[in-house]
Image (tube, rainbow, N blue to C red; front, top):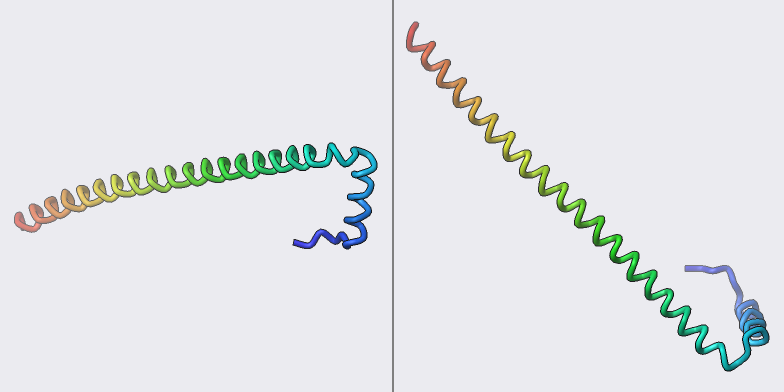
Length: 91
């Protein structure tokens, strides 16, 4: 991933942060940023897993509906064949 920030710009940003917050606060700020990034990553992973579970449930229900419809179609075919067999016997 390209951030389009050169090395000199990163050094300048780090220098400004050092001047504003001081050397003693930078580690605590970095830990806070790391914790925030971790929480964001965990939240997005949870959202992805919930979406995947929902998709899987929809796929399972479509399969069950398809099986039920297929069974009904087979039953109707069987009834129709019995009807046609009885009509053929009469003639």
